[in-house]
Length: 398
Image (cartoon, rainbow, N blue to C red; front, side):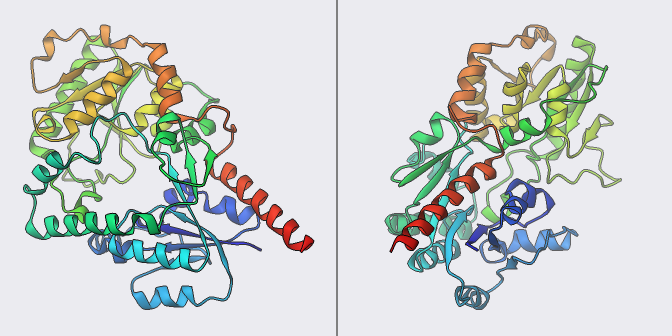
């Protein structure tokens, strides 16, 4: 039985267990391990997750790596690691683990599934340095040291395999040896829910929440939140009510998967219905999507839904402004600043959909032409099984 290791740096909860296709590998007969590097890479995120009562999805192959000693134990196991799926960033601990596994002969596989429309370049040093000085000296030093480390080790950890989704991801992969043509995570969601059993009668607008004021991933990175609850939520709620009144539809919020709005003392959305764990279904059945720059907006493309792009004065003062503008441009839409006079907005006009733009977006960012209509990880496992079969045939011939 071939062995594969996942490297991750966010807690393995039920959602990630499903998203990363762990059960698919088990069902297909692979010996799979998940090495959770979150405690090493992001100790504050890990502590917050545990203290908030977060539930880990444990299984026989799950290993929480809280020290270098635990990593050494895994390296010392006798089974040869054929591949490792790298879902981590380039940080001190993760780079060392990658280098060690590659030295042991494991094939590194990464995915390039998160491409989005953006004019921000990795080489935009002026913008990044400007952002850097807004944060603490500790955060700044950490960022600079990681940039230097990435530069020094880039050639040593080049991926052998890259899973791609769309033309843009293919263009950004660099020097990988092999491509596995697939699609992104939102298309996996689409495959599961594209044939609804029951379609709701009520028409509604859905706001895709990005948890911008409290997203936990912002904490370990040390960056500042792009918006404050005191200003952000009243603006969003006002805009949702304006849209609701103008179009004669109910508003609702598709909560971010990691959002915690259940506290009785918090009424951020001022009584507007908040729904959890059903973002895909809410977009599929809605009349219009309201968003900033969430990747879930791609489901609006797949289901042919109109999209309203919104910003605020606070968001416009950060790089969020560029992200929102680039998304809107790809959809053929303009951005509405909801801190301005919304009575002048023609909300009916915002329901227009440019299907040519949607088709182009699908090809560029969501799905690679000719890729299979099956879940991402089934596509990857098919590829790995074929490679193992060839390996076995060659070994037998020798």
